[in-house]
Length: 256
Image 1 (cartoon, one colour):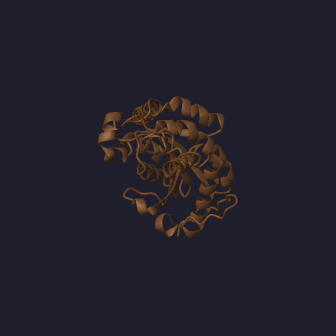
Image 2 (cartoon, helix red, strand yellow; image 1 turned 90 degrees about the horizontal axis):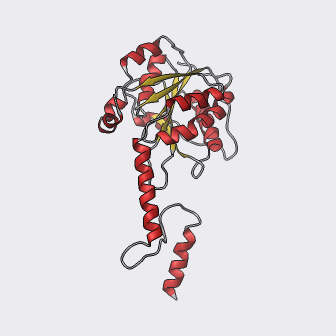
């Protein structure tokens, strides 16, 4: 009786999580259905890491929302190099740095859409998130929206510095889990420059329908941008103390 009660409690947990709990067993192994589901999830996670971002399709999605963009690449020449050399993924290709310098938007907030470790996440969620955020930023000066390939989070620092931006928000595909191949993250950095530490950023993670929905993520990002502009900082000095209800319209960025 005790064992049955314990199993029922474990099984009940499956209503609240996509984690692999209470899967049952067949002898010393998993039931066939659970084993096959695990293999499929593992394959989806691997595909998310290795698949390339469909830049043409993403630009079309952004254009449909009235969002103009620039396209750039990191210093990584291909995906295998990207996975082996994180340092190159943090650096902007020299030709693109020069091109962005010609499109400077001093004091603005720039948005960077970066494939990261899940192009699928950016493909699915980046355009809807931007479409929700950008119209709410008035009168904040918004700089160019940049689509970057083979990039890491810190690539936004190089891009933001090239643009002379007052802040940068990097929308990037997160490392896939076995149930989350399409999780999007947003990293917000005040006064981006090469060499910024992760402690100088704020992160919103797990943006996807089964995690943090796009509308809620947009509200949180707008709140953080507003707080960033007031305090003129991000990272450990900017605490996420967003009220339970709604987002917040951001004021203008200014530098001391």
